Structures are given as structure tokens and as C-alpha cells.
Amino acid sequence: MVSLYEHAGGDDALHRLEEIFYAKLLADPVLKPLFPVRRPDHVKHLTWFTAESFGGPDRFTRELGFAYLVREHRHLNITDEQRQRFVDLYMESLDEAGLPDDKAFREAFRSHAEFGAMVAQHNSRAQTENDLHPLREVPRWTWNDD
Image 1: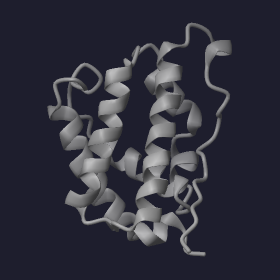
Image 2: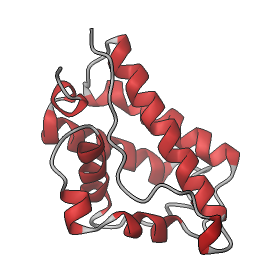
Image 3: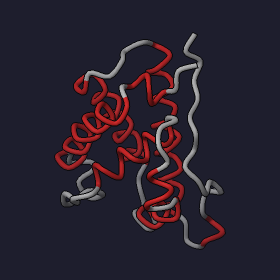
């Protein structure tokens, strides 16, 4: 079975996707409160996370660790509208980045984006450590590419 990482086109394709997506996040009025300024390493970190989730290198875990991601989302108080807009912009970015448009890949990508946005929202609202989502490592996303 081919990994989502390989099917997407590896690091180059995912980096291209994250550049397009991040530009949309920075420009979007709904998401602007969450992304007020461009952070120099954000695209690189998004690329690492997506690559690792999709079966690529484990750079995100080795270089940053999942606790970093939890800290980044804490106390952002992500709204339902922001969570949905994040997913919508991510899906919109796939075509612009030239990623595969087959149904199985798109469904896997959407479920990954929706799950990630849900976990981020959950952690953004957590008042205590016990309130955090139980996920403590980069999830490995699989798919049925038959």
C-alpha cells in the first residue's frame, strides 16, 4: 500500500500545499485572530506535521514534539466557525497545490483535517491539563487506496 505521503507527492508537494494554505490563513478575516502575523517556521512545521501524519519522516516528533503543538493551541479559544473555516481552506488549497484529486485521497485528507481541527479546538479551550484531548503523539493517518 502506498502511503498518503507518497501519494501526495512527498515533501515538495506538501510544502507547496502548506505555503498556499498558510497564505490563506493569514488573509482570512475569520482566522486572522488565530494567525495575526506570519511566523517564519510555520510552513515548515505544518509540512513536517502533515508529512509525518501521512507516513513520511518523523521530523515533527524529533524536532518539536507533540507537546509543542498542544502548547501552540492552548488558550486560543477556537470557535466552531474558525474550526470549519480552517478545514474548508485546507481542502480548497489541495487543488491550487496540484495534489491528487482521487476520491480516496481527498476523503482521507478531509478526515485528517477535520480530526486535527477538532483536537486543536478542544485543546484551545482546555482550562487544565486534565481537560486536554488525550492525543499525545502525531497521529498516523491511513487510507484505503484500492
